[in-house]
Length: 137
Image 1: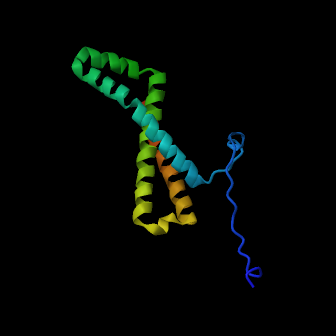
Image 2: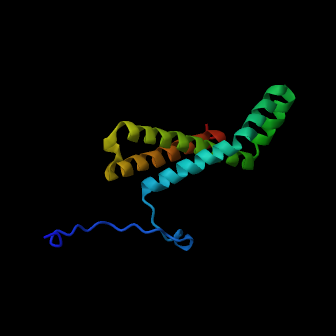
């Protein structure tokens, strides 16, 4: 009798290092990994950002020097990446808090929907920062 009601369960296997490139991660997994990467980037760059902030407050001359550096296109690109990291990390953190509070969001459909919204909102807000940073308004 037990053999007649055989339940087909999915099989999860460990992947090798060579299979990472071909492995298809769901969108919620990509958002989760980007959340960790953006958090690590912000954590590692925090001393540098605090140093720049301290230097900008020491005198008007140092502020003008840093403002001149920040007007360079490469510095603006670095600032834009930091802004994306902050915005994505913030929105993905709100997503995780929502999943902790509302267990309906933990479903496959809810996870995909919230992952799409986090990616879309973070990219839209980053585009707005880019427009402001590069002088569109």
